[in-house]
Length: 411
Image (cartoon, rainbow, N blue to C red; front, side, top):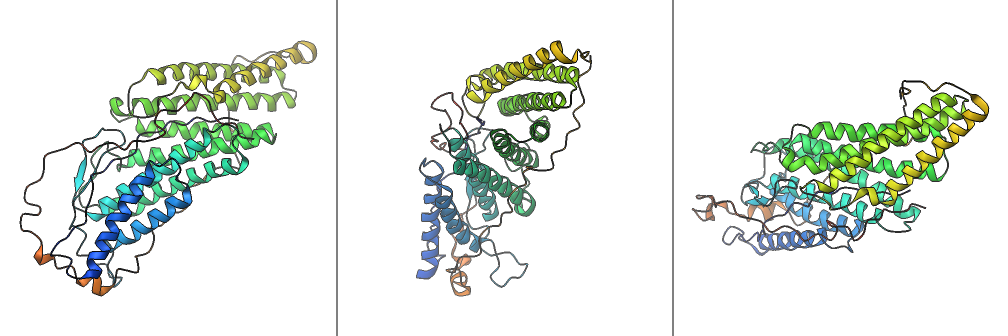
């Protein structure tokens, strides 16, 4: 079984020095600031390092986020916000809307923006691993796990941290509910693709495979509907991907449902189900071409040339021919005019996000360290004049353009 996943670009950010000369009045306070600068720089480097693995990413994120929490959390567990929350300005671009950044003088904005990028990294790691030839069972499990982790991070940001932002999220921006929801659902759908591949490989009951495929198609359709009110200039290519995956997995569902009907001696209905599968596959094929021709952020690829796509086409053709032969020799059943209604519910294999929490406050943050930050010594013109919009350099990603049009083989 093979896979191909669309990916939007990572968010880019302006450098942050955390140099609070005069404000950080002790060596301990200055060290925390220096550690934050170094750990942030290291984390940003790992986003584009193709040798980075989940363990390296978790170590880097735990370190930076545990230090950043000192700008957000109260040390005495009270509801009062930390005095350092608004001391630093942060700039981040958008995955869809180009290189003009949004800026907020708020450490929570940094927390959710960097967290968003970490979730994106897990999806890109999964995609890169799934693009390998001869992927092993353990690697397939890593793909599955990484997508569930990403979904959990997106969900945690949406529910627990984005609502704490002082400045409302701009419409159509990454942190808006529509986009976050689409990312969550897409991660779940793609993880279920791995489940379906495993079920097919182990020759599980066709009824289970059909139900999983149908649930996965519904996930993709829901993700697309969530994006439907966004400007197509930004979301058009992403939506083509979600549309083609919807049709692709509806084709899978009808194909395996046809096998279930044939096993129940309902050959006429099986033929009609396979004919419906052919229709959805043809729609997916047309959408593959449209996807390749649509301009916008995201992966450059020709999905119809991928093995994952060609394999399904052959399966539908061979299964339909088998049903037609059986009907001509044995059953002689009439083929219904209406396609069978898919009322399939998978009892196994459905994907839920892995729960995520940010790490605890770093041990270097003590009451003494926090007290050593003297906000009265900040420069008076620190926030007086907002700087004009400036471009933030995009991250040089290793996987925006795939090396070749091949999927991954899960064996």
